[in-house]
Amino acid sequence: MNIYIALLRGINVSGKNKIKMTELKQLCLDIGFSEITTYIQSGNVIFSTQEINTSKIENKLVTAVKNKFGHSIKVLVLKKKELETVFKSNPFINEANFDFKKTCATFLDKTPTEEGIEKVRALAAKDELLIFKNKTVYIYCPDGFGRTKLSNSNIENKLKVSATSRNWNTVTKLVELSNQ
Image 1 (cartoon, rainbow, N blue to C red):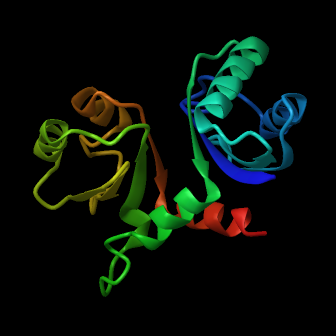
Image 2: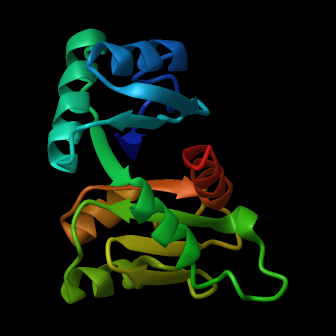
């Protein structure tokens, strides 16, 4: 069995696309996944399956959520090793006195173009930091994420890819849970 992490975008945000984690866990069981753990209400699921094609897993989840809950959402599925690589590759990890509460990882479904990257960089305020590594953007927003122009929607618009973000505490917890 292979361990995966599904990141569902846009559920339980501002009262929209509500899905209880117990219902999401049952949905995952119903579509054949096992060893399922959910983490917080924002749509993080760790599970096992024999399927090796992440695109097929994503499509299976998108279809199941649409059929059961009526929500059209985006889902990004990562292999356990991919999540661990994102965690270990955080470029801010060795910075002294760095506030990880103001850091997130934005996961992309495709590697962005240089043109798209420059468009996203133009959105950043002068004190915000963003570093692109493969299909991940590491973002530091010292004034918080509520004020930044580096939202998932803006990033998707500029890069022409799907994106979903998780704060660094969530990334850390997902790595821990996937190793249990």
